[in-house]
Figure (cartoon, rainbow, N blue to C red):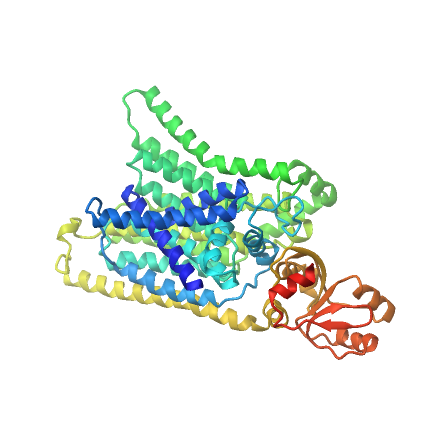
Length: 626
C-alpha cells in the first residue's frame, strides 16, 4: 500500500508541476512551487478544521490535473517544451535518490524532533486537526504548521514512520535546491553546473550539527529563502509572475517558523530593489505609486496567511514557549536582572570570535573565497566585477542576524538555555548556508560572463581562447564534479554512520521494548533512563510523550532506596517503560515485587508489574487505554 500511495502522491506532484509549466512558471521552479501551493491549500483546510478531507482533495486535484494534461496532450491541444537532461540533473536524481533511501531507514534522534517537529506531525496525522487549548501534548503552540502539513500529506499516503517523515522533508529541500540551476546562463557548461552541485553538497557541512535526518527547519528556512531570491532574479522582467512568486514564498516562510521574518525582510528588500530597477514610467509620481502599490500589495498578500495564524494562536492559546511579547520580556528582566543579560551578551560575543565555531569558520571561508575570486577575475581575467559589493551585503546580513539571534536569547529563552547559547550553531547555520548559496550563485554567474565566447550558439570544444584554457577548463570541470560527488557521498555516509552510532540511543532502544501508541491519551507513563542528562533536559519525557502519544510521560534516572518511597513513586504511574537496563531500578523491583526485570514495557499493579509484549498490536493497546 505504501508503494501505491507513493506513486499516487508522485503523480499528483507531477500533475501540479506540469500545470504550472503551462502557466509559464520557470521549469526549475515548478516542483517547489507545486509543493508550496499544496501547503497553502492544506493550511486553509486545516484552519477550517477539515484537514483529512483537505489532504485527499489537494492530492486528488494534482492527479486530476495530470490526467487532464495527458488527455489534452494526446489530443494535441497542449505541449510542454523539455530541455532534456543536463549533467546536474543526473547528479540531483542519482544522489538525491540515494540520500532519500538512507533517510528512509533513519531514526529520529535530535531533541527538538520530540519537543515539537515530529510530535506535531504525529498529532496532525492521527487527530486530523490543528492543536487546541486542551491538546497540551503540543508545547510550542505558536509555531506555524507549514512543513508539518506537507509531511502529514506525504505520510498519509506512504505510512506514518520516522523514515517517511524524513523523506518528505528531504523532497521539500531537494525541490528548493533545484531552483538554483535556473540562474545558469548556459546550462550546458559542466563547470558552472557542477560548482552549484558542489555548493549544495558543501552546504550540508554547515548543517552538520543536525544533518538531514531530523525534522528541524533551520536548513529549510535557508533553502526556501534561496529559492525565493533566485525566483525574484529569474522573474525580474515578468511583474505579475514576480508578485505571485514573492507572495507565495513569503507566505510559506512565515508559516514555517516565526523567526522566518528575518529572511522575509531580506526577500522584501531585494524585491523592492528589482521593482525600482525594472519599472521606468515617465512620471516620477506614477513610478512611485506603481512601485509602492505592487510592493505593499505583494507583501500584504504574503502576510495574510501568517496574520490569520496569529489571530488563531491568540484566540486559542494564552501563551507559548519561545514567543516574544512584553510580558515575557518583563518576566525575564525581573527574574534574571541586568546581570543575566550582560552574562548572555558576553557569552554570545565570545562564541562569535571563537575560531573553533563552525559558523565563524563559514563566515571566514566565504569572505576569503569571495575576495580571492574577486581578485582573480579582476586582475587575471581583467574583468571588473561586483563580488566585493556582494560580500559587503552578505556580511551585513550576518551581522544583523547576530543581533536578531542575541535578541532571541535575551527576550524569549529561559536563562538556563540562553546562558549556554543553546542551539547557537544550529541557528547560525541557516544564515551561513543562505550566504553560501547567494555568494556561489553570483560567482558562477560572473564566471560565465568571463568566458572567452559569450555567444552561446557558438560555444563548443573548439571555442576556447587557447589550448591551455581548454585543458584548464576540462580539468577544473572534472575536479569540481569529483568533489561534488565526494562531498555529497560524505553527507550520505555521515548520515549512515550517525544512524549506526545511535543504534543504542534511547529512541531506538525504546522501539525494541514497546510499540508506539497512536491514540491520544493522558496515561501516566514513567520512562526509566540511566542517563541523567536525558532526564534533566526533558529529552526522555518528550520522547515518551511522542512515542505513547500522551502528555503525562516522565523521565527519571535516580530512585529512592527507601522501599516505601520507591513504591509510592512508582504507583503514581499507570505504566513503566525500561528501554535500557538500569541496575538500581531492577534491584529495587527485585526487593519489592520479587520480579527479575531488566528491560521492557510494564503495566503497574499494586503488587506486581505485568509485562506488555512488544508484539501486542495497536488495537489491544487502544483497548487497554479505554
